[in-house]
Amino acid sequence: MKAVRLLQPGHALVGESVPAPAPGPHEVLVRVRAAGICHSDAHYRAGVAPTRLPCTLGHEVSGVVEACGGLVTDFKAGDRVCLNYLVTCGECDYCRAGKEQFCVQGEMIGKHRDGGFAEFICVPARGVLALPAGISFEHGAVMMCSSATALHALNQARVARGDTVAVFGAGGLGMSAIQLALLRGASKVFAVDIHPRKLELARRFGATSVDARAGDPVAEIRRLTDGRGVDAALELIGLPATMAQAVRSLAIHGRAALAGLTGGQVSFSPYHDLLNREAEVIGVSDHLLPELQQLISFAEHGQLDLSAVVTQSVPLDAAAINRVLDDLEAFGGGVRTVVCPG
Image (tube, rainbow, N blue to C red; front, top):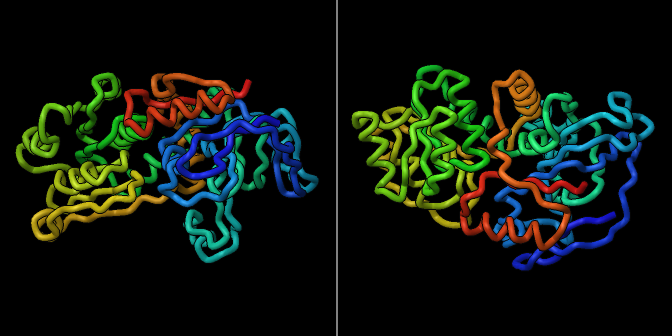
């Protein structure tokens, strides 16, 4: 089968012909119909995060079941599905506690094992979710990471009805975060970005836009909140500067949930920005399986609109995927691109 793979960090992805996987007794073989290109893929290509090599990237995946292992009873050939990118044991203390992203044997598709930039992918059945007919493959794919990380960040930040929320980064994650924050009753959502197109889309989803090119976004958020700041700030970009801004934008008892990846150091004043406000900085790692199920329900009932989030599709071609990753590294103006193998 065709696959687009990372062979060496710091180098372009390469198209290869590799053997198609065969499902084990508890596994499902899926013909890939859509695989989102995430900013994390750019980090893996650059070597910011360690990755098994060689590796087929792509962790936002949806498709159609091609075949099932002999002990799989929940799915059959022809079923529409999307895939939890976390492959977990289900038995360790973390899995039993519902914190499966810290599974002691856990792997991530497209990072520790082959992912979805390929014609087929094989995964354990316990990580396969049914994709309703009313949700496109493209939307089903991006929900598995961008929407899932956004929802997990909101949960980690304990966003509740009446809260004010700042979303730093109005890309694929940010557009889901805006909608999901408003869905759970946030009184005001501020979308911070530098791209006019993204800010306009954020306004369409109900956010108040904050153009970081026009000045200090923290000062603007404080002006718009009469000096108070926000109850929760989500950092979805992965830059030390925006992480510091998220912390500095907090109100008393505010919570900053940091989901973006960076190898840099973040600088803020512990006394002024945290202690004096009893504020919190919270790490956001991946998502939980029940959150994926909740997102599918939201999308099925029209409460999560991803129609404007997927801004382009590309074929299963190394050059095309590398161009998208180049744009992501440059923090370009696109929202989400999906690979469609055809």
